[in-house]
Image (cartoon, rainbow, N blue to C red; front, side, top):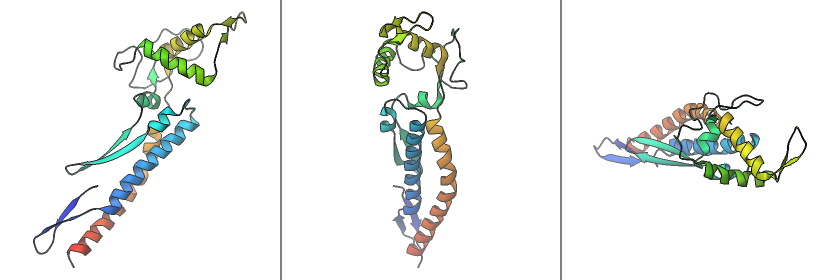
Length: 196
């Protein structure tokens, strides 16, 4: 909670909490999380793990009010997408255009082994047990299907979803106007409490 100190006419400092402004911040952060979860649902979030990991934490540092939005470690990659490492010669274009992240740069601490484990659980959730070769019609082993999907993701990248960015922008515009009004209400309340 934020604290505000006001000097009353007697020269004493009184502490009064800006209740309305604090509530506006909390409502804003809850709405951002709620809209981000809705966006994930609309944009095909596979397991729901990311949605369950999203939360907001507000804290005071000096005179600053901080809102930390917390989620799974891969949330920024889902939101902003990841550019591919290149080398893809198949159909379809590259994904993640304009993303600050790129496969193969080493900026994230992922490994091919971790990626492989994640791909195993994703394939199981999707019910993929084997594939078919489009040219011959023959079945392909799951291990080969997994490799082909992993290679395509690595080379082409991941699409930008903006699940969080869109939710934040939508609610930030509301917060800007609402926060001013709530802060004025708090100031009027504090003045009435301390200067009667």
